[in-house]
Length: 456
Image (cartoon, rainbow, N blue to C red):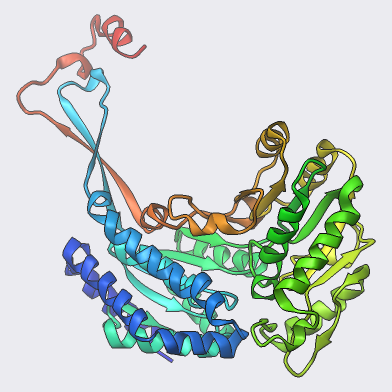
């Protein structure tokens, strides 16, 4: 493992040269990263197959392709992002002009999870590079094959004084969190997020926490049920449900519950076959610990679809659970697997009240044809982000910032949001030397009445 203290010293020395603040340097590093990803594409896809059994299409769509899009979007806009922005100045400060400057924090730490191990490591890195920082990456050892290719790519194209990769498990995380970084970006569970924030507080280090939670999916009695079923099945069972913004549970109007379940069964068979465990493109659970946890949650309700599992491959078929209550075990934690519990509601008002009684989720989904219901849901519920009449795809728009709220996280990224997250906004007022209005200086005499005219 890298000597963390020595690496940080090298990064701070390199940052002090000012090279990372040069726009041409940032652009060159992003271009190098893009070309390295393209040249190692087959190895990346193979690593994702080994770690999670991701199909090539799914691996490219949700991992490689998303990172390349993030780089391309950043390269297209970075020259405008780095420019100082002039803002209005109150008349009382005449003659002067005011500006907002962005500057990098310095050396930042990015800790990423195992479920989208390539994307969730490198998408934040794009923002860190664009903003002019040096970076230490800590990918998950649960997805060891992907972590290995990330380390190899980084060593090929970056000096460790600019971007370094630290491998290892919990001990490596603990060692990193003892050090003083200038910013920490963490993606993972709420429990570990609390530990990261506690460690950061010792150094007063700012953090972004991308966490999770139980993201609801509400289907009202006006929804297009066939389309809703299709999009829910796709979003829930993508990566075998191991997605932080997957629909965690369904809240369905009682009058359409049985029909929606029938439609979902149809699309599970259509997408994965009559026996998903024999489908070579169906992902696996990351490790034995999570596999056994999910098998325990299977007992939380009546299995109306799926429920089969294969211990040798750590696969669990797409499963729908009925007869679930808010007190069921499956409703007490984020599922993070291919189990979909179904609950009923009789009015949208009651459904939203139930959602609002629980911690604010990372994502929120509503299927409806009613503009009134759409407006009510968006206004009444607090959540990180979401979709109306779809699932998950809001993450794929670089113009939409992604992040949580409350227990689902803090801070945002994607697109300019990534640049802003890894930048400190510095406010500057430039005062003219040609004129010095005496209003603010003592003795104040009758200055108060004049000041009130300016500061209404």
